[in-house]
Image (cartoon, rainbow, N blue to C red; front, side):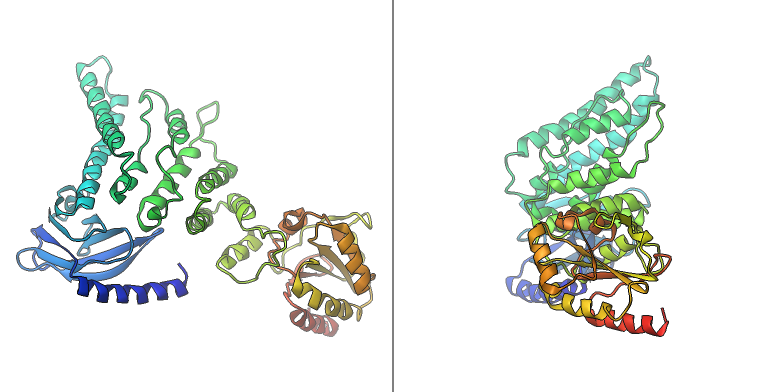
Length: 469
């Protein structure tokens, strides 16, 4: 979330609390063993949570919060301990639970009793089924795999394991057509098959992946306001990349990560906000995990401009573009990608000039139409042996390019065009995301400047004349 959006969120939250006080809707309850204990109320959005209120229990463990009128899911954190519980927004919520600062078990959530709130009664019914099933997945499954099959207790383990999944599956069947409750939509997001426990995990994961979106529609905006979306994204990535070779060894291929991310994002196309969040989330994940190839593949898939769009240097994706510059090796001081110039039948590196100026432009770019004549005149101050200019057009219609080259009199430049717009290989190689974009290369063909306008280029060319580059 950008600083501007965070500021809007804070203002909105302030207005919400004023409205809430007028409505008198509250979250209230009693927490056993919690005397004068600080409580903190958080709001979920995307993969972040934001503190929106705080209070404390009294000497009897009673507490209350003004009911927020934004978002879907909230977290109440008990002091600074590991104890917390989740709530879904509803009219009035009353509850009773227990405080026990255990390092492993979350007593605050596991002991929850919802006294008032249909939404949260349904939510905790699901959480109870899910908790029992997860214990089966993490404990009973491992016991089944190591406990002797010939022992009678093995049969008991298998029955209990299957029963826990069966109970959850029956619950899901009952609610799958009743999605007016947020609790049910959250629950259905976690509906997955239960492959044969005797099979290896990669095979089991492939079965789960094939049914991952049976009841889960990640484009539903509700999931942006819960912990569901980032958690489901992480799980999907893990399942899709759990691949083994013929010797049973893990296959660590960045293409698998990029492919999994792209497949997940395809299911979010109906909602732009969700789609953009998922793109940003996976890009940040690949950045943090140093999966540079996966980052570039995802970046090239979703952050290329549309035909006829001049692009921009600074927007919400500026951070990703700058990182793509690094991963693609076109930072200042790095060697620029070489390419063949068909019109001259030479590679760019073979041009005999001290400096080469690459100018990415397009006839449909209004900025280019204004600046190209001035850029052209500025380059004429240098002989070809000092500065050679290669103009790379992002156009798709040869006749228009030829007409404007002749009209502007750009005959002293070397011209290059793949007629593929933003899908051009050279555009991707140089990570061009706005026109005009320029790269000044030295004798070793390293990038020494990246001016984005005629004014910036003028300053660079002055330094070139002075021998300061």
